[in-house]
Length: 238
Image 1 (cartoon, one colour):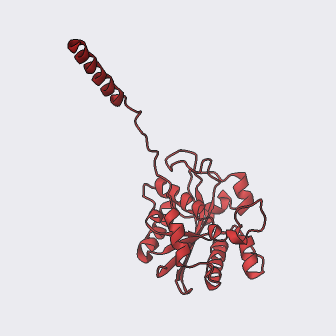
Image 2 (cartoon, rainbow, N blue to C red):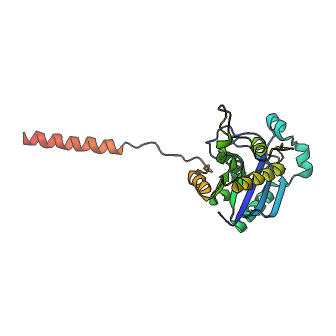
Image 3 (cartoon, rainbow, N blue to C red):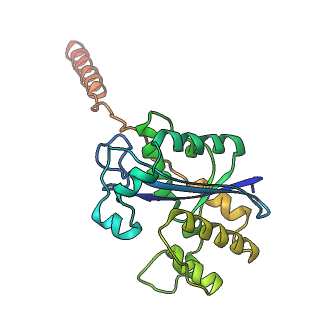
């Protein structure tokens, strides 16, 4: 395990329309409205935390997203900062600490942040570091055959027998994610092999859509030309 761990959580303006689409596809990826991260040593000592709201004029919060986190544009106008300034802070911490990045539903957080990094013209710095998802790592706790993964609040209750209050505030959720991670390590349900196994499966979302040229028919033309030559040779020989 790396010397440092960075736990991260986001609240967003909505959900992606297509999870497999590149960040360059307009209107597909939601925008981060709150980003929180905590930095710990691998032995569980917190050394830093950041909690920021993003205020930019280029997005609208969907009604369904508002019903989840309760963040409004009026609140963001008073408490928010620029997207670039917050993403710069995060990129600086990633560069300085070179951490293992941990989240609950890590694919969502990494994708939302990756889309926002694309919007400011940067490559996604999360792609350069290993990530670990507590949601994917705890499927053994699922008892309902109709669901595949546990929500953060459900995992928190299973591990600590307490309800997670004020969920969907990124700072609350990221603290809970850190608590769950270290509890799972304590129970020896997360170890280096589990972390490496997830790292092998990582497939970052492409920034832009790869446009492949249409298949060319050169191969078939060469075959036809060779058959033509053979026909001529047979004609003269016979």
